[in-house]
Amino acid sequence: MNRLIFLGSGGGRHMIRTQERKTAGIYVELDNMKFVFDPGPCALLTALQLKLQPEKWNGAFVTHMHIDHCSDANAILDSISSNAAQPLIIAEKHCIEPKDKKEKVNDYYPCISAYHQNLSKVYPMEAGKKVKVNNIEITAVRADHYDPTIGFIIKSKSLKIGFTSDSVYYNGMEKFYSGCDLLVVNTAIPMAMDSPSKPFPKYHMGIKDLITMLKNMEQKPKLTVIDRLTGFMVRANIWKQVKIVQDATKCRIISSEDHMEIDLDDLNKNPRIIGKLAEKEEKIRLE
Image 1: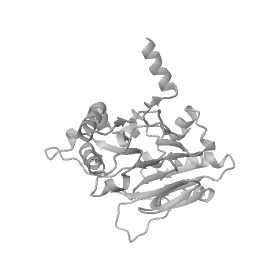
Image 2: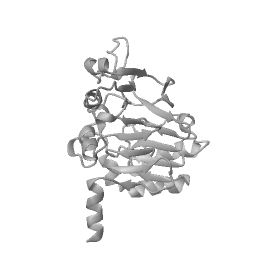
Image 3: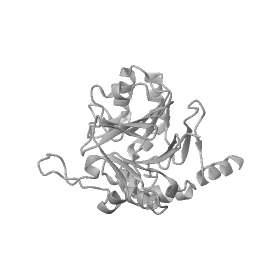
Image 4: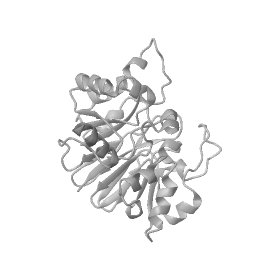
């Protein structure tokens, strides 16, 4: 079975602090490979709670060094290596390499320790770079954020999946993600906050720009998931935000939920919640 599980659906400082939505990243099983994307706080614990056996995973993808995207990466790599396997780390190059003093960007640091790099097969990535791992092709895509960041496209024989990571929309962004079967878009800014009368710092994608990207996309995704939800998005009524995008683009849009599983072999199938959250929902339904 090819599947994707949202270990968490939250992003940003508020969610890190409160865990109102978990900041644990995304787990993917594809063509017998098992990866986690951007494992933030609670990634390892959530994987254990969901009985996903992280010690049997192949590795981790990291798009940038902000802690809601990388804080559990070393713990995941440690878990894999404890099972006598060499983990893979596929990460934006600044997550791995020391800072070049000539670069005029905000302060950053290698978030993968030297010890864990030595345990792993390391793929430092930058926009445009491609690598192939077994039967999966991985492409790094430009992201426009306030620290060095990339998105990812992963392609198997039958699927193309896009992860934008944290990025504002930029002209031409849609061409990279055109033709994705599944597109996961980190969307932090609700429509009400994305207007000239209420300016918001443009470090992340907003609902307004997501609409622009999808409208400009030549080949629309079969399914688009709004992810890495901020407190702003949740309080603006995430389901209302989904409807705004769906009505404007005529695309199939859903919002991520903690422990939500998507069947990658049948994207028309409705996602389901797994683990104890599912048990809780079933209890409420029966009552």
